[in-house]
Image (cartoon, rainbow, N blue to C red; front, side):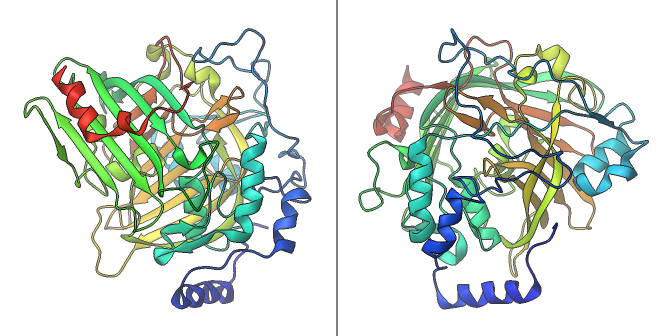
Length: 452
């Protein structure tokens, strides 16, 4: 069933927000996480025609001889496409395509979707499953749906009741605890010129998933992130630091180190619809990692769940040469793997009295991993303007399906696009690390790094 929520349910949700924090599910509802639902809340069963198989635990073992940080091999390299979608047969498959993907098919005759057998590879450690079960009956959305209390170490709302809860699940999706990777950002101009916009080292620490974390002792900052630029030379030494909190009680911290100024300064403009300097301005800051920073300029509506062709299990693309992957007009269709999965659809529309250059968006969130995999945006004239993607890297050593690597976006109006967080041709790929100290993510340490 494509749409699961009625107008009456939407009205009930609004009434719930008016009354305060949203209520957690009952113990009986949460028990479904051990029966009809996966431990993270997806439907265990496949679909009616078998094109989406049942979830059987995901992929949890790295291949023999694998070392942390090595480029991950494609475990499904022997798979062959079961379907190819082009502009010619688009109409026959339109119900399973996002608006942005349909626009790309119409705009670029050479663009196509190579659809492979669906592999429900998403998995997480048992501790994440256990915490998700506990969160289901204890977590509560606060701050008008933009924050959460009572959750730790797992998905907060595995049985979501509205769009805010789905988005909070994305923010707290499992992608590892502390990870680091050398990355590059590649830009393709409308006239077919490829350039590296930025390169450096990206580090994440997610205290929310620390082994000893507890809801009563947790300080509320679920993610600490730092990107230090090393190339090109004109940008070398620049850095961005972000501290993201669960509620309004933990105000977001953003800092930049600018080489020309030789100092660290607060950077509140690194948010919302400010053009993202890391992508040479093609992307917006709140499109980074598919969602970066607050969403309080938009009202969220949970449209429901649907079957959609999405990029998935793209280890082959992650290992490709840049010249082969980042091609004119679009990423090379021969290297991008698409699969049919169930996704949650959340529509964001501009809130009363707010301003944003993208007044309407649609987010598509993978049911198995709770990560945004596709994002479409419309301009003030109501014209489709942007479509963003993450190729999703399969990392069975963590284990996780990772959406904060290999993401990017297309400007459908100018024809330019970019690929961010790409470790292609670099020696290390999304390497798990022991938890780094909080001082590593401090403004003071950022200043010290710049001074060196």
